[in-house]
Image 1 (cartoon, rainbow, N blue to C red):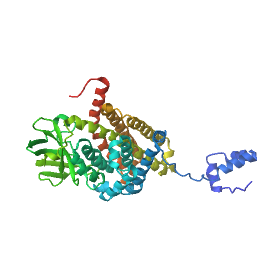
Image 2 (image 1 turned 90 degrees about the horizontal axis):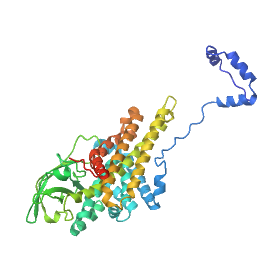
Image 3 (image 1 turned 60 degrees about the vertical axis):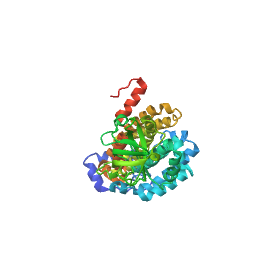
Image 4 (image 1 turned 180 degrees about the vertical axis):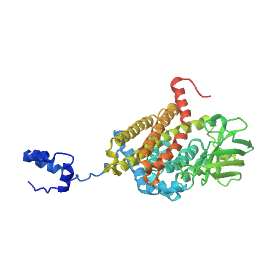
Length: 441
């Protein structure tokens, strides 16, 4: 047995608290093998373990339900977001700037992920579009909104409602990001009641439409080449869509300042002061607001996917922080209250994953997509917001610093909570669907 050198100072301190002689007599009577185990246990702390990496797909839902091709799409998008976007996302967010140098790399990544006609696949394969809408905001919700407005709203509007000539002119350049699109429905005084309350009007005289009014929040519009403007026809009172190009006389765009969420997104105020566009700029496939509502249902489903990606990202960043942040001599992930909070976060993540995967298999019933997308939006955003709150709390004071990413996602959660229909409006859509009774005003 190795010789152990006793620390006399330690023995002196111990003697003031315990009967050292009694302890030594007990050690002397201890069988040699027991004493060896005791000494081995006091040789010093064990070698520190490598922190365990977070696994937000705790039930393997994506592994089980996604095809090999869908998994490939996710890997391509995730690699680009982690390697290219994450290192610069905080800087652009803090400065409130659009990362223009990422636009063409983003376009190249989408071609790699979705094929040589990526926008066509994005428009026609909602499940794959959902996976893209999950993986991009998992790292940077601002870039997710850029793509959601550019393709998910502007390009899809032209794809669904445009004339052959409009499609020939715009779809290719928008798909290749040679031209950038925006989309404008919400007004300064009208959001939830846009279906009936639009004040922006369009009046036809011959083959010319004159559009007058104001819009608010439209993403990308400060630099977009074309913006889809929704306005009420003064002749029949129905909502119609128009393609308004930048630098059209009377079309004035001002960036919104003072945002605390999705700061890299260029949201705007738009004034339309007698803007004139030809009949060839009207989207002929739109007959009423009902057509717009159908498109919004698909966009709302995309927001549910976005919320899931954000919840996963928040959980991953928080988990990594807690397994590496040492307090009181050990990683804070080793404390009971921290583990309980991480488990609550993971439970939320798994729950919202199940919801969007269920939604993703329900696109073949478009007549029910409206209420199903609304339920997914309500539930997923609620749970994502709660997850962000827990994660921000676990980081303590560091939870308000961008360097750990959670602060940015925590702030962005507030934007996602509010758009594509408030929580209350989406809840009423689902309530009407399940009861047959409308509780709208």
